[in-house]
Amino acid sequence: IEHSRASNGVAFEFVHDPMISLVEPSIFFVGVRDFHEQTFLLNAPGLEFSQHLTCHLVYGVNPDVSFRAEFVANGKAACHVSKLLAQRIAREHSKSTFGTISLRLSVNGGFDLGESRADIKVIAPIFVQSLHPRTVSSVGGVLIEIVGSNTIPEEELEILRGLDVKCVFSSLETTLVIPDEAGTSLHCISPTSMSAGTKKFSIHHEDLSILDFRVQEEAIAFEIAPTPFIVRLEQNAGDRRGGMKLLIHGLYFSAHSSKCKFGDLMIPGILLTPSILECVVPPGQAGQSVQVQVSNNDGFEFSTCRSTEACSFTYLETIKLAETFPARSAPSSLIYISGTGFRAEDAALCQFLDNDLSVFATSKLNWINETFVLCTTPA
Image (cartoon, rainbow, N blue to C red):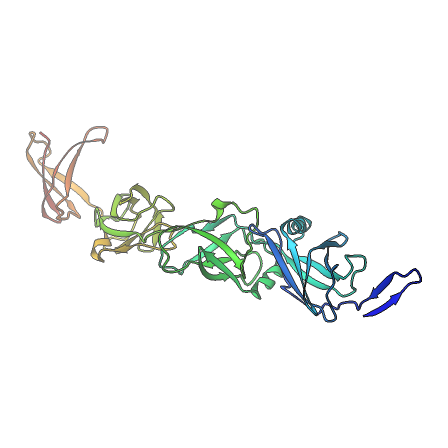
């Protein structure tokens, strides 16, 4: 530092231009939901205390913008970006999100700016349209898609890959899965051992949420729900052609994204009550036995079952009728029916149809063998 005195007696102080050698962090997420203030720490060898220390940003087509600075120690300063300034920068970068801002120091309130500058990479926050699935069990390990994040340019993905970015479910942190190329969504891995209920979801870099301020609360609503449990199937067998409405009895069924799975085939389910789900049996091969499962989240996770037998469904050959004997009889009379595919089932019934092919009466089926049964005509 050098001193000189002018002829009129006013003192001047000449100081060395502080050289900025390092700024931390070197990344700036603009337009985030929960932004309050961000501090940038600068290493500036030669910097000494000044009452008029200011920080200055140059971004886009704007001239430099001054904002609050703090002298930390010799050679060190802190620049504090307010929420208002962050929003201003976000608007400037709204059309071209990837870029840089330059940070400079002044020791006289901005009358002179140091020649040295540090470039900070500007990154748009992560936009979320929705989460898929938005309901998982406490088992964890489900890959959750961040719908709406597939527009992040490759330059920003490359930066994200080098940062410690985490998915946060309430207080639990999990891994953020970043795609290998642009055009693909980000994913989060669901946490384990979380209690059931609605959870607060976010994505954090260090202690800062980096979700876009435009993200709606309903877009990040997330639910931990119990795993569905099957107690029994109303029927454990049915025609190979499918089409039968099967009632599934159990616990923790949901109306949201309900699915039934027969072996490898997944179909929609209809919630009748919290303990009864209805599914239409898909076609299968005669003699084939499959396990029936239920999902509350579009097939990302499936139910457990009381036993293998309780959730087993067998496809049967279609029953074919050959003839009845006698062809005519009095009411409440026994008639013989011949055909193929008859089975000894406690719940088996004979149906009697009218001319419109509408069922007008039923009676218990008496099984004799696979080709003969007895039925009682309506009274």
